[in-house]
Image (cartoon, rainbow, N blue to C red; front, side, top):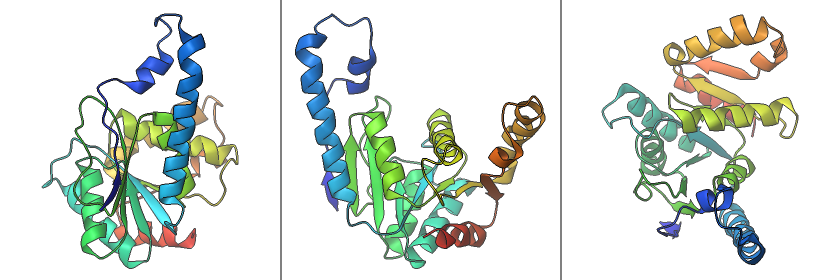
Length: 229
């Protein structure tokens, strides 16, 4: 596995964003900007020859024997058989399952990790691993390297990536970028709220809600993503 890994004790996002930090930004922030620039360069370089790829998101807290982990593993394998690289956050749970499926099917399995206190390192099912300091650099690399997202049940990080992608599609910052929600039972409550509250009160349009496809069918998910490449 090719791996670009940085391990540091400090939380780089926190130091960048914490307004209570000492006012030494005149001396430190210019160097931090160069570090951010270097991280973009490393990420872009590592992913430059990836080819058609799909980002798979989902909970890091799901056990390996959970039905959704099993589905993610099968999905990763089918994406690989369709000639699509699988890109995840590189962590455990659903991410590791999708990576495992892709790797064992002979495909390209990529993990874009992030330094956070509660996760230790990248999962072992990767051809390529890149560990980022900054969330926003990692987000750009997800969108830049992928032709679409498949989103499994997950927590705050999963929802963050989901709505980031939808906003980029809505504002036409990206085009032909399908977003598939896998697991209709999990997502139904959110979809009901979007329709009966957000749409009903005029905060979004019907076209916005049409940006996502919900499915429980692995073949359908793969077909949607293949059509976008």
